[in-house]
Amino acid sequence: MADRFQGKQGLVLGVANKRSIAWAIAKRLAEEGAQLAFTFQGERIEKSVRELADSVQSPLVTECDVRSDEDVSRVVAEAGKAFAGGLDFLVHSVAYAAAEDLEGRFTDTPRDRFWMAIDVSAYSLVACARAAEPLMAARGGGSLVTMTYLGGERAVPHYNVMGVAKATLDASVRYLAWDLGQNNIRINAVSAGPVRTLAARSIAGFPTMEAIVEERSPLHRHIDAEDVAAGAAYLLSDEADNVTGTTLYVDSGYHAMGM
Ligand code: 0WE
Image 1 (cartoon, rainbow, N blue to C red):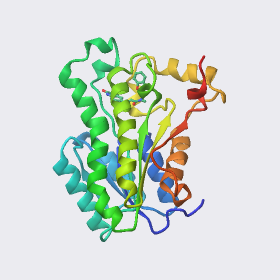
Image 2: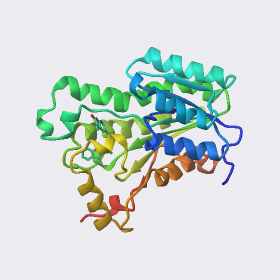
Image 3: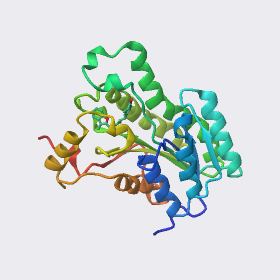
Image 4: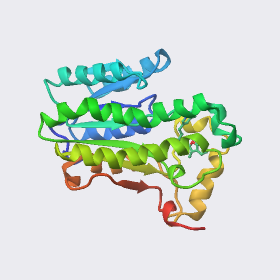
């Protein structure tokens, strides 16, 4: 294993369990020498996140409600303290829409749940970037990565309000890239094909989507969290020194197809 992250310190948001994309990314970064702080959302998953974090000798596990600017600021400050003043990278792997809005018709999405999905899934990246910027600037630069999906660019049946949230997230990456560039901070997205996570398992028709990707993508194979982690690790590493404001597709090439 390479040691691209030796001496680097980062914060990971979005681990729920061992199948989480955020966990696959964290494991990869830890294997390559990174020191990691973690956040979790809700008591129900605290134990699993603490166990995973312990397995990579994490100095900090703390709750974070990404809908609260105060919470995001506190968490980033705690990470800064745990790491003696600086942050090299941040992994944002957070999304939420009400389950009932990921089925049926987009037309039926109520106003409050439309904004909730965008708040949790897109604005949270802006809040993280704002809070992390001074700590990364103090290290001479940094890198952020977020997770997106093709459903933000094309209409994927049932993805609905999450598609609108991902479109918001994708545009936010580009505008944040411009702002953060002045402090040598990069920000990019990984667009993953369907991966079997806790979030995916509750989605009706997920196996059908996997089958479609396997049939129609140039590489005819499904994507796993480790594939996504390799892409994220590249974007976070110094190897991607001149890469910002972009999207790396880890989807077996599915996005390139028109049929
Ligand atoms: O971004 C996602 C899913 C994110 C997600 C999943 C859930 C399930 C449980 C957000 N909110 C919730 N809320 C819940 O209550 N993906 C890219 C995976 C995904 O989700 C879909 C997909 C794909 C692909 C939903 C409908 C159609 C396709």
